[in-house]
Length: 487
Image (cartoon, rainbow, N blue to C red; front, side, top):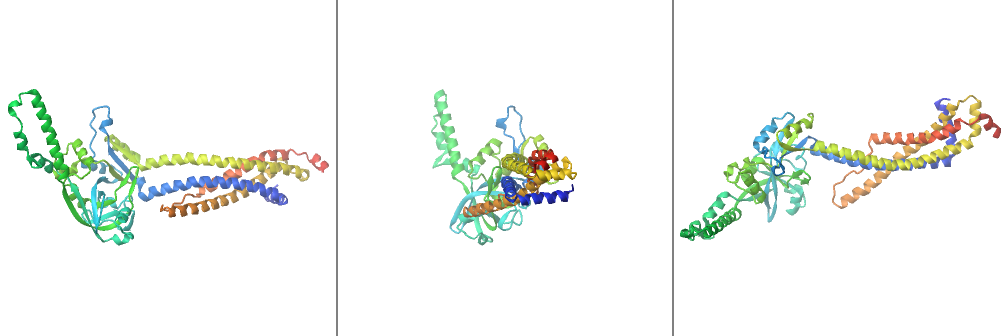
């Protein structure tokens, strides 16, 4: 019995039992549609994440952090994350670019609006990397020393501008208040009309031999020195101003380890703000105290440590080798490529869970195939008897029934894939409409990759053929003499 013979007989039988065959196919179709829809959701979300990683260039981005001495159990001194460390990182094979995360407080004035925000200085090479190149309107700045500024779309709204393009080319005033050590020291000498000499005159030197009086003077004068220094350091701040031209508008990225501040300024232009003193951020002062650079000259402030350094890597060099090198140097690292592997593992198990749920529906549908084929044996005993009397082997009868169950599975699976795809399109349109209403960027939640189509076909046809094994075995054992006599 040839394949065309089996195909002709199977189609003829399904046509004679149209209603039963249609209901059986419908069962497979619904099960496969559920299977495809669920796995399509997992595939769509995985593609979204992968697309975002590609758009931001995260597969070639690695962050480096200094190790926390407070969590160390020994007295090992970990290396600082300073400019010297950046030079060492740049020499590691596979590292294209190294730049620090250098942020500070800033205020931006446009017209009558003043916005307090955070700024980040960055080099011309870094702004051209994928991580920073996603600018909504306008362009990146032209050089490290250009008098230009990139602001966030949220800041544009806060400035009362409804059309972001209209801010491009406009001038804004950026300024920072910096605290200088000199101001603190000056207030130790003179504070609120009281000089250091006045304080000294109040001390009874002849009573300093008394232990209690001496301890009281030390405590009082120490507290006074600290108060006078902090008063001068924090309140006698200098205002540094610069007029910059807005060259671009982009979205803020602040999620997890990603930090892109609302204001981006060329690194050489921002140097003036960074080299004149401490910003209003107390954390900066405490970091300087802990690193021993608090009393350095203002020009040397940039020699202090960074909290984070970004490495742009060569896509063709494995990241693991670079990560191992950095950790041997005594630093902590974070690789997005490594994180994506963990995400892939999560989606693998997530897809398996969804697939099992879909398979339960398919197994239920397979019982319908088995019932249909068993009923077919009873109704087609005479046909089986005639085929055997004409020389058909038991194997041919078994293969014929497997062929028929496989056809039911193939038709139901094909229609199920189309039905599942249609369902996901409808849900996707509803979801995207809701996202637009809520101001959320459009996102495709479902995907139908080739591997999902092939897996669905394999699972649908495979389960259908497995469901046909019992009816095929039973049909192949039908006695032709008895089948023809009973007829």
